Length: 68
Image (cartoon, rainbow, N blue to C red; front, side, top):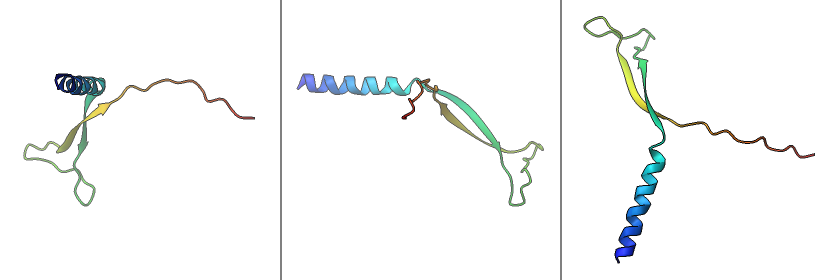
């Protein structure tokens, strides 16, 4: 019983390490109305929708050989 619980705990511990490699960046996009004009707030600044995105490292591979 203890070995089953330990193996499950190790499985979850290793799976979270895989997802931790991605960097998070903040991306903001201006809010626009139906006519396509930017929406401004009370101070006169353009409103923005911001979200966090994960940026994964691009892996380099070898070229696929061409069949003759």
